[in-house]
Image (cartoon, rainbow, N blue to C red; front, side):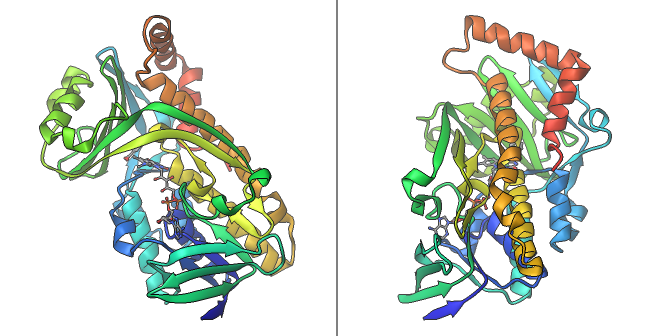
Length: 393
Ligand code: RFL
Ligand code: PHB
C-alpha cells in the first residue's frame, strides 16, 4: 500500500511523539512508525528528571497539564560522600531555576493519549522499517504491518529511533563520524512503591562501594540506582541485596530512613557517551538517542532529546510556513552545540561520582579534593547547578 505524508517519523519514544505533536500543532502532516507495541514502549522505565525547557516544551505541545499538576518540583540536589550529605541549592544558585521529577513513562503516555485523541497515525509493531532516497528530493519509508508491505512517500524523514535504530545505520559510513566512550560499569535500577527517602532533593552518592542515586516518581513511588559490575545479572540481585547495598552507600541518617518494599521493576543499564555527527543527511534528520547517548548521571538524555526536537520542529515549520531552509541547514550545528555541553557535563559528573577500576590512590584523592571544592566553592557549585537545570537554549 502506498501513502504520502510530509514528515515520516521513525520511533515512538519521547522524541518521535513530541515531534509529531509539535508538527501537528503547526498543521504539518506526519506519521509515526514504531517497531514495538505501545505497551512495550510504556513499560520501559527510564528517565525521571525534566529540565524547565522540557516542561515548557510539553506545555507548548499542548500536553503540559498533567506534568504541571503531578510533577514534583525540586529546588536542590544532595551529594553524599565520606559518609555525609551536602546540599546544593540549585534554585538559589541559578536565580530560581528548578527541575521536575516526572517519569518518562508518564510523559510518553501523555503524548500517546494526545496523539490518539487527535486521531493521528501511529503504526505500532511496524516490521522491517527501512529508509530510502533521502539524498534526493523524494525520500521513501517502507515497512511491513500484519504481513502487508507499505510504502510512505514523504518530504522528510525524522530518525527518532533511539541508539539501536535503523536511521543512523542507513547513513553511508563515510558521511558520519561517531565518538564513543563506554564506561566499565552499569547501573542497577529499582522501582518500588515506597515513599522516597528524599522527597525534596535528588541524592547522588559517592562511596567506597560505588555510586548510588535516590530519585522518585511521586510521593509514593521511588526510583533508586546503584553502580554495579557490567557482568552482573538482575537475577543475582534479590530485593534484599539491593536495599542493603543502597543503604551501605548512603550516610547513616539517610540510610536509616530508606523505606523498603518489593521491587516492581529491576534492570541493569550500561553507561555510554556517544555522539554522531552531523545529524542531517539530505532529507534525513536524527534526533534524540538516535544521534547521541549520555550516561544517565546528569539526567540529560531525555532533555537533550526534547531540545533536538524543539530545533527540528522549528526547522520544518520554517520550511513549510516561510519556504526557508535556514532552520534545516543549521539544525545539526545548533543541536550539537548544546549536545556537546551536556556530554561534557554528564561525563564529568560520571567521573566524579563513580568508582573506576583505577579509582585508588591518586584518582581517589582527586575525587575527594574535587568534591570538597565543589561543595565549598560558590563558583564550583554554581557551575554544577547551571548545568543540572539545563544550559540556556
Ligand atoms: P527512545 O526512547 O529509545 O525511543 C526510540 C524508539 O524508536 C523505536 N525503534 C524503532 N522503530 C521503528 N523501526 C526501527 N527500526 C526502530 N528502532 C527503534 C524504539 O522501539 C523506541 O520506541 O529514544 P528517544 O525518543 O530519543 O528518547 C530518549 C530517552 O529515552 C533517553 O535519552 C532517556 O531515557 C535517558 N535517561 C534520562 N534522561 C533524562 O533526561 N533524565 C533522566 O533522569 C534520565 N534517566 C535515562 C535515565 C536512561 C536510562 N537508561 C535505561 C538508558 C535513566 C536510565 C536508567
Ligand atoms: C531517575 O529518576 O530515573 C533519574 C534521576 C536522576 C538521574 C538519572 C535518573 O541522574
